[in-house]
Length: 226
Length: 226
DNA sequence: GGTGAAATTTAATTGTCGATCAATTTAATT
DNA sequence: AATTAAATTGATCGACAATTAAATTTCACC
Image (cartoon, rainbow over all chains, first blue to last red; front, side):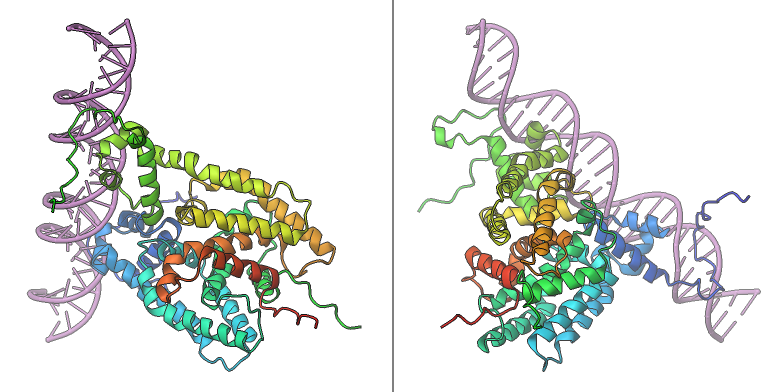
């Protein structure tokens, strides 16, 4: 039985190149992954570079070698991880010759798929966007919001004018509501899952719940004819 | 015109007692207020004691004199500011021989009133409940949730069984949804208010919006008979 | 095979923050 | 009036985090 050995405490100097190609994981990307995960679970300011380094089994100095500074590391994360996701989300609203309901259904569906596929997203979002001084807020307000929030507001207002939807809704609040409705349950998962057993509540169930609430609220469905 | 003078840089030693009774504000409470405000807007870890001290026009040492440690200060805040509010909220669901809609309307209404009256609440709530290791999480899961979440779940399930409400909703997700729907828009105020002008969106407007969405979703109201 | 660039670590530097403690001033008590 | 208790500052210590510099090892190319 081989003794489980500490993974050779990495000598100084440039390490030998991996010959196994699959193993040649780009260190920089690995650092990004590690940082993203820790930032999401603990917050950016609360996570020292040393911790990222330890988890990635390198030294803090290497983080500086690759990113220059902590601030820069965050910026890289936004640029390379967050932006692609949100851009993808932005696409959803592009072709909207559809019915409003259908459009919103797609938007919320896509958003929730994205949240389910990237568990770090909701926490990071709450912490770094909603929080005063959050590192990501400027980006949101400056780039993402104009694309999404304004469009949603206009679509809702137009549909209201046509009498297609509930006129008591405030168009300008609609986007926030949408986001709250989808992001919050994901971010709060650890809480409600520890309140009652809910292993059977999959992302799909959550999606159904949210969409149904969005479309009909508490209203029971009309009795089917027959 | 008198030169605006720096408020006398407080000599060391015990200060003379204020004879004006209204002026004799309890320093400890003042420190709590200041800390609460800064914590809510910047985050706990992001706020050094020195900043609280500067804003309250005392030295960091005094904070230690009154609270012993930063951790203790946070605990005091939770104990003396947050808990009373949440307890008060817990009362709302106590007497519920009412109709489900009416009950929920009251619950959401009360919650949103509370949020509007205590602007620091949403931010601190998000941080202390949703965040891994937040101070309020244990309390919420252990005490508040059993009162609220379980009750809401049961009420919703019962109403569904009676065919009174939308059967597609997941009862166990209902409470989270409710909280997300009300807390999120408040917490995100700084964001959406900077996206488009919305001075006219008062807490009452927000309340109407949320309640209407909750009750009817996107459904337009039935054409009034006549 | 030698040489410079690349990738790492170790070690040193600097700044900030929380905490402690002695000194000082006033209040309260006897 | 004397003495003790309470409230407050100033100075500073130790921990730790971010950054920088230097040293070391390997790689790639001529």
